[in-house]
Each structure stands twice: as C-alpha cells, then as structure tokens.
Image (cartoon, rainbow, N blue to C red):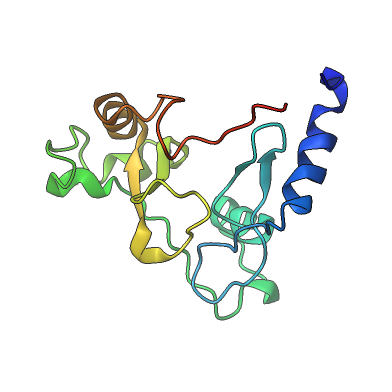
Length: 150
C-alpha cells in the first residue's frame, strides 16, 4: 500500500508510465493541456488554465487570440435533451451570477474525449439527476476508472 501523502505523486507517475497524455482543452483553437483537478483519481478539468481564467474573469489577452470558449452561459437541457426540461430560466445563470453552477458533461462518459460534439453544458441540477438516473456513480460500470493497485 502506498503512503497516503504520496498517492498523488504515485498516481501521476502511473498515469504517464501507462503511456497516457493529458486531454487537450475543449475550447476551439486551443491546444494546451487541461488543468489537473486531482492526480489521486485522474480527475481533470475540461479547460486549460489560460482559458479557464479568461472565461471566469472576462479578460482575454493575447494568449486567447483565435480561441472560442465552448462552455455556454445556460443549461443546454432547456430543450429536454436529457428527457426532462431544465427548471431554470436560461437568463437566470448570468443574471444571478451563477455561471459556476454550470458543468461540462461528456456525452460518451469519456472525460478524455474533449471534442465539442461530445460535451454539453448542463447545470448541476440536471447533471446530478442525469448521473443518478444513469448510475454514473457506480464504480462497477465498465467506464469506471480502475485503481485496484492504489
């Protein structure tokens, strides 16, 4: 068993030893690697640090030239794509300054597949309901990450 304090370093080393690479930022025109949320379970954001900062602050410097932000400012489930309609009015996210309550959802469940066609913007309400209904929290699912030797 690995010392708990050394787990992130061990998991980072294991990630690259398996020949893996960090996913690329979702935003069109950006080819930078995404931000690592946690090495202990290989959890990554969908954006690089530069794009995330530009999106959150609204400040787009030279590093953002030619880049289009993918994340919408509303829940795309307003059209009932998940089988029910989002209960929040699309304009409320901006008006209430609640853009952090919007997630990027990988349609195929593969968090490394950061292509715009595979990623929808959905709110935490819809994301949570979808995850429960689809059993996304089931660690025995075929798509679950396996860390048995950890």
